[in-house]
Length: 398
Image (cartoon, rainbow, N blue to C red; front, side, top):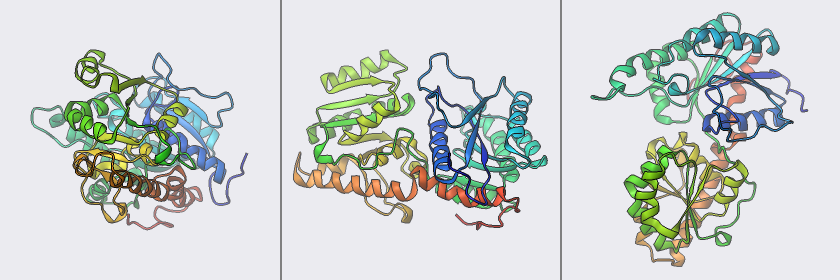
């Protein structure tokens, strides 16, 4: 086992809503980060998992699993504090925690009011807190439950921000929101979200791939794509000569899926259901295109986006992508209109796919790979692990 790099703690605690054997994007991303921290820097991870596992396991935990897992036995602060105290005893006198914050991951209503006091208790006893904000809070909308939950969610966010030594987010928009509430001037940085289904070192070239279009991700995300853009998806598939549209992931509404998707696409569709990570990786690496319905300005926080990029799979984005930002330099997200404007199965069409694949994969390696995520976190881990004050070794900008 790699020894800890001088100046870094031997272990950190990673708090996640769900973890293996559940299939969970946040949990898998945290695991990928943990593997890099241990392999390259000798920093082990103790996972504190809030939600109990689902009855039907989706992913395996290997016998030689290199990290420890502590599960919270019950809801609320008391069981969480008890589990955390158990991990602190193992981590040393000044434990370092990385909190992966997703409001609905720690509360069915998205209002985990017990979490800020638990974090404040942790820091008051010598713990050092880093928070990765995967989400912040919902905007209040009329005739929606967010009308009632947005304000308590905002209070929770502000308290977690104040309790943290350093904060991170994968969204530039979220960083701007953090800056407006960052009254204690906690250092805040942009961070990538890595693929949770593998990072091939040398992805297969597009001209060697099957004529497959992949639709991967959570059911709610895939259903939104089919409900809003099935006609365009089918048009692009025909235009490219696609022989299979691969639906990858659990189908939580088989009746709707059969009526609205399978009935429309017929033999072009193949539903794979939930697969082990290596099988998902093999499918993505052998796909000509990956489709996703996701707000373009939030693409930095999408694990599905990261999975396509990591496999050098061009991304067909709905709605049509916006112009790239300076950090996303490279014309790599694709819109249906752009592809349909090029000749059907023409050299120009496939050259555009190759350009997109190369640019997206290069962007992933620089900003979103597990190694890049670890390198972004390391200065903060080093600062708090050495017992220095917040902000002593990292700037407050993004």
